[in-house]
Image (cartoon, rainbow, N blue to C red; front, side, top):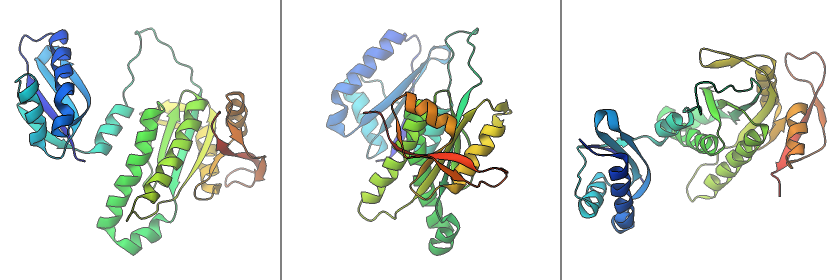
Amino acid sequence: MPLYMDRHDTPGATAEDVAQAHAADLTVAAKHGVQFLSYWFDPDNDGVFCLAKAAEAGDLTAVHRESHGLLPNEIISVSENDVLRFLGGIHEPVDKSEQRSPFRAILFTDLEGSTSLLNEVGESAFMVLLQEHDAVIRRALLASKGREIKHTGDGIMASFELVANALECSLAIQAGFRNRAAEEGKRELRVRAGLAAGEPVDHNDDIFGAAVNLAARICDAADAGQILVSDVVHRLGTESGFRFEAAEDLALKGFSDPTEVFQLVDAPI
C-alpha cells in the first residue's frame, strides 16, 4: 500500500490540540482504509505532518474531514526507503551531556549474485529488486536501533551500540527475506551477513578500523542465508542468550592468521 505524508497549517494549535486531533483520526482511519504510522508537530512553524499508508491520497483527506475537519494543505507520496533511512538516522540524546561508549557492533550485508542478477533481469527490474532488498534491511535496522552507515551497492553497512541489537537485527533481516520469498511471484533474494565488534573511528558519518574490516571480511566468507560473527560478538551474544554453532577457523582476506568465526543460529528463548 502506498505511503503518504500530509501537511497541515495549524496556527495557534498546542501539542494537546494536535494529540486530540490525531486520536480522532485513529477512530475512523480503518473505515477509510488508512493506517497512520506517526505524526510530528512543529510548533515553531505552526505545522503538523502525518505519515500514513493508504490506497490513495484522498483517503487521508476523508479521514481528516470526518474526524475533525482540519484538511491537509498538501499530501505527497513518499518512498518507504527514504522514510526508513530518515527515521533510522535520528538520535535524540537525553541531554547535551550524554556520553556514549565508543564500542560498536558492526554489521555488513551482501546480496548473493547481484551482478548476475543485474545481467539477467536488466537495470530497471534490478533497481526495483534492490529497493525491496533495502526496505527489508532498513525495517530491521529501525526496529533494532541500528544506524545505517552506508549503502555498499548490493548491501548495507550498519552499526549498533549493543551486540544484542545487532544480532536481533541480523536474524530479522534473514526472516524478512524468507517471508518475502514466500510471497507469490516474488523473486528470491538471498543475503549473507557478517558481524564484528570493537571501537571504530567515527569520521564524517563513516566509520573505520579493525572491527569494520573484520566484519566486512566475515561477511564475504559467509554463504547466502548465513550470519557469521567474530569471537567478541559470539562471547557477548552468548552472554545474552543467543545460540551459535561451533567455531570454525577461516582464512580471511587481509588477515595473516586464521580467524575464529561462529554462525548465529537463533535468538534467546
